[in-house]
Figure 1 (tube, rainbow, N blue to C red):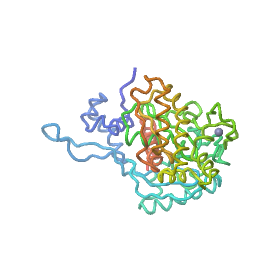
Figure 2 (figure 1 turned 90 degrees about the vertical axis):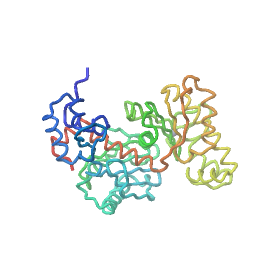
Figure 3 (figure 1 turned 30 degrees about the horizontal axis):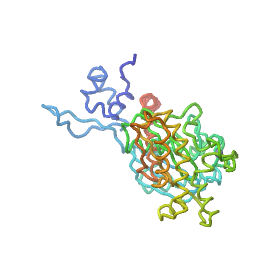
Figure 4 (figure 1 turned 60 degrees about the vertical axis):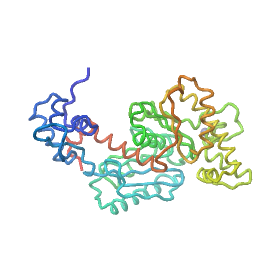
Length: 390
Ligand SMILES: [Zn+2]
């Protein structure tokens, strides 16, 4: 049986989640006395995590003061790395960007130069946002590869040469004295898109199709990572009939070797339409280039084959297609195969949609991840006890 949530961190959670907006509601939900609630609230108000403001007009008599999470009391440094570009931002705790930058950054240059550049961007962005380094409560980084979430280490990434096992948090902590969380980009895009557009969907899958292919799974509001952080890593599932296609991971016939932005760019180039990346393919699709349309439709079908299994295993309410190839013809291919082959029961309540946040989805997810992690009841209580809150 669950015990009554009574710590300061638990009370913070009740306010953040909107379950309690006043002292009276906190008393009712926790069963604590008025003076104990006041004592715990003093802790949260003193560190600036909560603020009291406005009035609750719904009740009669003297209007009680409303409590709310103070989204401006600290900032998050967020970054999402793609293979050749990156985006970084200073976010408030509600996820709003205070300063943002995107630019060329090649993960193939290896971890040290990439993370040094990123730390430099963060320093500049803090200055632009008018915030100090000691106001940073946490840092989040999304990377295009599998991650062991507990340690923040990338694990045998197919498209991040030199990053295997590299301690990303240790490197960034040389510059910033704050916790660093690292996660896979598809996971972070899924978390961001789920929060922004489908917060009530209890089972949500996002498949990212850009240079590579990956998926993020959100179950009951949180990222489902599996035992080794490998959940959703569908890009290297091998198709039975494409042994001719050599993948970057060294295997043959991987989904990513056949249906990713990189694979389509190579195929278009072979057909006499020079294309260097997934975003190049996207440009051709938007221009309705017939070869690109045909290849995207076929790639959508191949991805749809794998997603048929995903949908039958997870029975999601929303399947979101995102990334460079999330254009009409590709999504049509996905739908064709999915509705034809998946069990009707698994697709009866399934929406197949495209992303809404575009290139910013990963940043949104990273901001969410860091705040949800640092202000979760146990973590919040530990930080209050240590006095490490900014
Ligand atoms: Zn592969």
